[in-house]
Length: 180
Figure 1 (cartoon, helix red, strand yellow):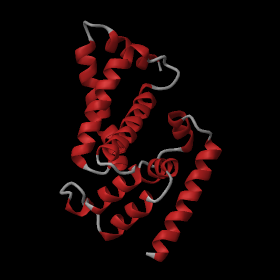
Figure 2 (cartoon, one colour; figure 1 turned 135 degrees about the horizontal axis):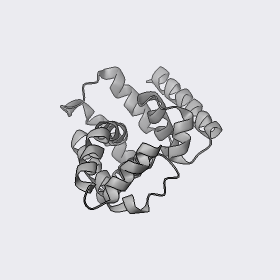
Figure 3 (cartoon, helix red, strand yellow; figure 1 turned 180 degrees about the vertical axis):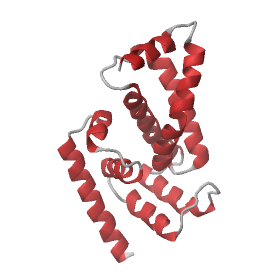
Figure 4 (cartoon, rainbow, N blue to C red; figure 1 turned 30 degrees about the horizontal axis):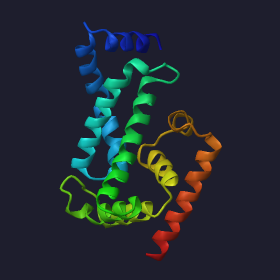
């Protein structure tokens, strides 16, 4: 933890912040890309959201209180940016975020960066039908293999509530896959 405090000091110090931020980008770009991609699905949109995430991180580092790990704080920003992106994209297109996500899933097969098969497309279609919170919990647990304790820290939700959300999501996905 002491190393992280020193790293944050480097990020905030005008003499060392450029080098420190480059290190931050190198260390966290891929894991943040992965979580954003599970939410927005499209590669180009993911790149845009990732860029916005790092801009927000840079702008708000001075407000980071250290109550959580730096990465947890950045993860929370990435997730919020991804959800905001989907909601704003839906609003611009005059539709709901659910309808927007359904459209994105339907276009996955034409995405050159998506290497999934028909079963993975079907899974994505099932996930889109879940309530937003269940979607997020399912994606973090299933795709990111995130532990509930860590998820709890990021999302500010109890472990029990997260387990219940995941359980309900799995049941709904199983039902969808059986009937479609």
